[in-house]
Length: 159
Image 1 (tube, one colour):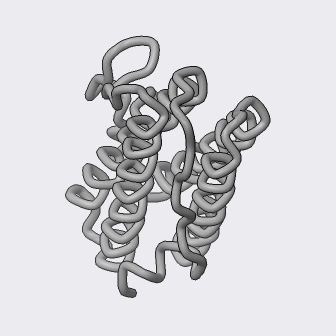
Image 2 (spheres, helix red, strand yellow):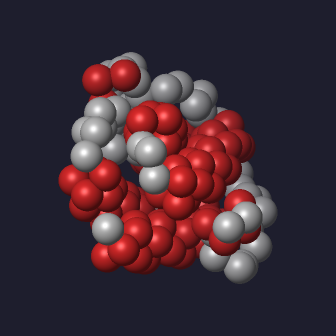
């Protein structure tokens, strides 16, 4: 699978906005919080390194790259809204947020739950945002997260 197979086939919207620090702050947990994109990236990289299953490892690499793109998009949106993309929301980001589970069946189930949580967090954030282009961005990212759930479920069912 190529990297594009880990993202929905729709373009990501451009962020056009005036400065809005409150909207920028709303993005921080998804950007660098305990359940945010940075944690997803580092978790999926760790899992890729420790798994012996080539199909799972390849999927984790592709999904981690998609999450890296989400992280970049959120960081750029935070800056455009007048904020600073600090790694962490209420506290600085920590490696303790990473899921260090070694068993592929267990970590795939946990990844599904983490992606479901990310979607729920994005949906809640959309409801609180005032900047329409940022809402549209989060709705687009949700499509990728839904795809990641499908991929993880397919991998889990093949074990």
